[in-house]
Length: 195
Image 1 (cartoon, one colour):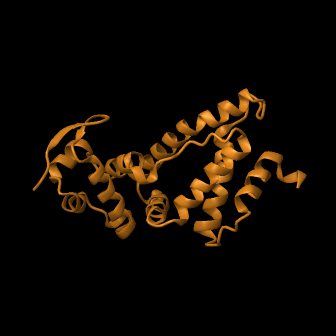
Image 2 (cartoon, rainbow, N blue to C red):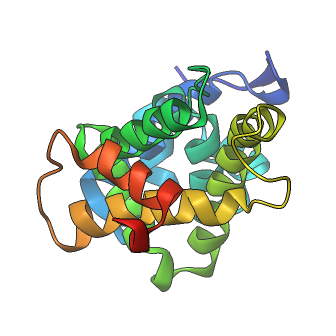
Image 3 (cartoon, rainbow, N blue to C red):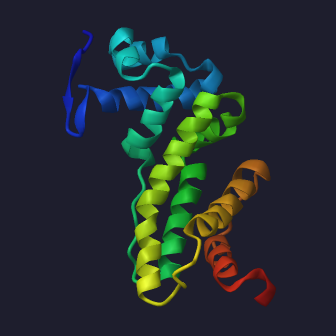
């Protein structure tokens, strides 16, 4: 039986948005962005293709909504009481995102395909903008505690840390040693020259 449209807990949208998002991410992981189709998502989620197109006019728009709306890729904003602890917790989440099935296949498929699709590039930008907006409170607390100067660049700090994980896991295909996270955070916070 196919489902129609109704309000969701977060405003108007398909009644079964979580099923749609999960189907989208499952197919993205299994088939890559090129192999993913709106028709395939409709079949897997049990929702009419016309309903999907009503809410998401393109495959890229659907992937974007799934990346930010699916629970499995959610960000838990840490509050350990220190910037170092919060950054380590964020970096561990990035490591999990890129190494722990089933999210790792989704993340690698989505992030690896951005150069092939302007729609997907917009999706990934939206995903990271959403994550950074939620991470911002970590840096605001650090500034209030005097751990960071007010002009610190949170985007640069996250880029350096997340980029290190991406490079190690995806491009170099090396394991993440137990001390990698604290060493990466320490290097960024203290500066490579002091090591």
